[in-house]
Length: 612
Image (tube, rainbow, N blue to C red; front, side, top):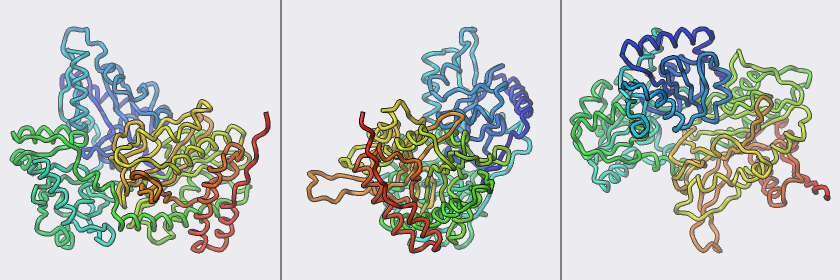
């Protein structure tokens, strides 16, 4: 379904809301206030009740921070969203700034020479403990008169028609899908606590709770989780904090006697009397809850959520389910591409038409639970907006020679998919063909990679996908890949293929491979397959080696490939991939789509480069 959430539909509303927020700032005798795109669970997806940044600014991206200081309002966004923020937020009210921690510090420290203390308010539910600590440390060293003050959320005071958070049922997730019982998982995590000398661990990530308890939910759009907090003890027992009405008798039977449900309002008191040592992840725990554990007097052991790595390394049952989900999703995507190829050229299509048709193809499988995220379908200049979401107001008709980026995925009970393909209508320019081919070369290089096990992380290999682009002075402003859950979050940590990721890759992890290129106001290109990390079974290897296995099944756009830029190994990989796509999908497609696949998966004819 295309996104139609426009919290700031009327541009003039932004000024009114900014004025109201400034009045609340003055009322609290503060000098500024921080408005992040976050909820108390600090994930990448927020429900309507927690989209405060969007309500204030009109910017609908998943990551950003608004700093309101006196007469200034600066909107910090990363490279994925700079173009989008410039289009959605009123430039007369909000200054869009590239997200950089030093720039945030400089913004807060500006004007520190006035001689009086500068007080900046923040909602301690919406910022992690580690982020606040880092900010305080940097501000203290640079601006001795600037202080951060936890306070009530000032946006909530003025957002009078703010939606309420949903209360959908938490559902059991069958062990034949999960591959391990909740009892087994809880005991393995409890063993980790005992090894660390901890009596308890605070769990704040909804997907960690879903994995641990073998449950799923519907509290966040596109992500099948329930919004809850939990504490797991060294004996494997769990105290679960959520609305009790979302738990019916079948769920309580599934959870068993070692999982106790408490009302959310009792969490504060529970943490204040929690015996330590207590393991807490400062990067994913709201400052508010971290303070409660400290106030209890218990020893705090700062460590990453003990569940995230276990969740990221998929077991054999999960891997088989993920493979099945990708076969099913590949069939749906092939039916979509076949339909698109058969649309008469004189029939006008829009971005929304493509989004609706692709979702209908996935729903036709009879297995789709939800789409994995709001489909990105950007044509022409919209394709240059990395996380573009089409709305009724932004919807664009497809024109001759348009390049279209389609990034989409499905949530199935046996797995989560995420695929991007770049298509062309009409005749592409030489520059588009060059950029696409260089992106393809990077994608193939990552797909073919082998590396020693036991310490190679995403930061060590991210450049491999960029080298072909770098050689022509090109690059892209996002990571090369993110982790993906098993019928959970489509953006799953702790691993990634990114300059920032230092988590070693392990067999069983799922990661995306999605290099791209974006020419502002003209076009975008991205190619994305999901990969599974596996051991390289070879008798010639002198040590343990890992490699990727491609999960995504969909043909690449032949018309955008300059085969003279591909070497023979790259063509061999591409031909082999297309052969696998055809042999896997065609027996299960309609005859018309099978015939289309036969053509779309044809072998590449290499054109020798012209002699110099």
